[in-house]
Image (cartoon, rainbow, N blue to C red; front, side, top):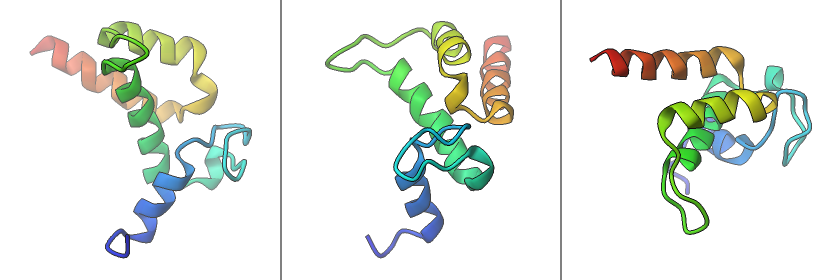
Length: 94
């Protein structure tokens, strides 16, 4: 789509990279990825875990965050993941 910015196209392409460079398609480390890509990575995983799918039921937010922390930390920018946790902690207080 020519209307998408290069930053958006990059985030779409590279959101399956991981922190240590073992993701795909280019095996880039998180230090090589733009901030937007690292945000999309966290958001995509969280959305996949908390949305009903044909192959799995949505997890409650707390369970999704626990799973991300315990089993997917290698994929996540720690600072962005922390912000997601803080966002949901603030929601719980409202």
